[in-house]
Image (cartoon, rainbow over all chains, first blue to last red; front, side, top):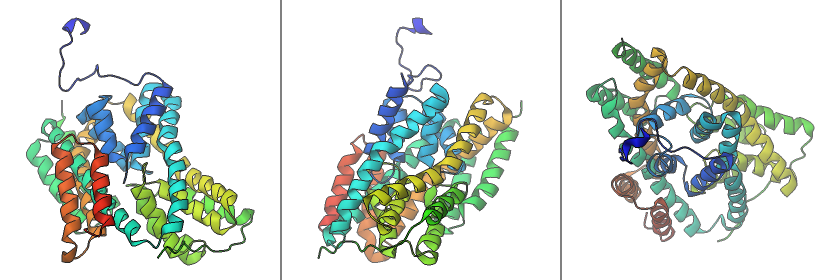
Length: 198
Length: 197
């Protein structure tokens, strides 16, 4: 593998870069969290997959599925999983601390400031504009990850069908997430299980 | 124009602090899909039942955490902060932050960490692979649905079309270009400040 003369594959399978140390994890997740206005998800994907390449797009979707299903904040779960993969419990704690510590201090400072200027119409408007952009960032993450479904064992057509059903149930019909995961999610896993038959 | 946010004056003893901690502890394992999915129950408990928070404080906690850098779960820290402020001052505020955050995080992180380590050790199992492959299209669709719902929370009627346009435009720009996300958020803040969205 090493003798491969630096051939750059667009989707390195196993030999992608890794976090170097606990400090690297802490700092990386702090920087990542600080860029994440309106939620960290859009930035996590861009940093971990596109820039640092600690994980491929496919690995990201897999981990994100677990992070999403388990209780707790998704990005917190994801940081635990990424940290834990490389450095065990210590790594998980370092990544988690990185994700929370500095942003916590900042958000408290903001709250103190906001309490003084709560009535200003410009501030309310700016919050609204940023929230609209933040919503778009999350959608863009979905669109980017869509490309990874081409390699899915279910096949692209079935993926699109399941995805559309899921979107309609959650976004349009507003069915609680737990029901959607139990029905559609379970069905999708059973289908995948059958396709994976040896 | 600049009215400061009103605070309450509460008498908090060990019992109340423990109840606050217990409330978040009990919601932790229910917070599938993110802590925000349990926000309605927090509202019921903190605002309606105990009167520890005002409606304005509750809403501001969510709005600030969403527009600040960092994970959105920090809205829980802000709720703890505001309960603490109502119960005294900055010091009790910090106590509220730590009790609320620890409560919401300890059960879920323990469970997630254990489950993820197990899943990683057994990643070649057919069931584990089927779970990950099967969930992939669902996860992608959930992201797009979340974006849709958040956009709808900002603008619910037809006259709010600029909000939807801004959301759609930022989604397409981020999808298709490598522009830094902060530029877009800054642009959103400016458009909002001047009342254009």
